[in-house]
Image: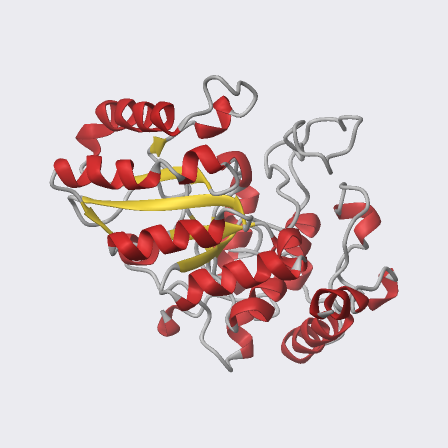
Length: 331
């Protein structure tokens, strides 16, 4: 009954979107494209209108208007100088590893959280916004957050910022591949804000940490993300668990562990590490206990990504300006 009530809130009218957001028909290439609950959209629209105003800004007016796609790159006079040239790939402190899990939430997330709790390890979950429109998956994300794990954004549809493409194995991906080109900043803004909203609905706060889909970024995207207060987080160790998904004979937790050990051998000189796994594969989540044991045998400690980077993972509550811009004094 609860799930039914949740989905009755989903509306398909594009008129519920703010005027300066592109309609789903433009930015959301999956079919059918889910649309946010109307109350959340209204909240976002009201906040943007209150903060940026109804009139289009111009570079040089003293207002860094990210709703009209100004950034530290396109308008440094209003938005300041860019400080980020690439997504981060390692921790700022030595001898630590951050376990990260992408593409959830899923049916395997809650058992994974229980395992991490038994091991006394905190991890970071980068969730896909559209998956949290499923009430069960939203509850799994809330369960992870309540257990002390960090929740980050993996965008709403999981579309590459560099190519606008999807994983062909995604059942909701368009059948026909569109031309490869960078994702527009309008589309990126819609992806980020919509994911922020569903995460906030699930856990009560909006994330700052972002895992770019496929680890792809562009200079324009990084500049807009930085100006908007997000921290793009990539990796220097990859479990490559996704490469096993189409071969049941090889899709085992033992093979995931073997790949993690190989990745760590290759990156041992980095001094600190961010590991990528996916909590949508049971053979990967069931490998986590062995992976933890492996890192501990190397004398490596575990941290969440926010601790790894020394960054605050969420926007301050009740500070609506922080939903749209980076205020360095707040972080």
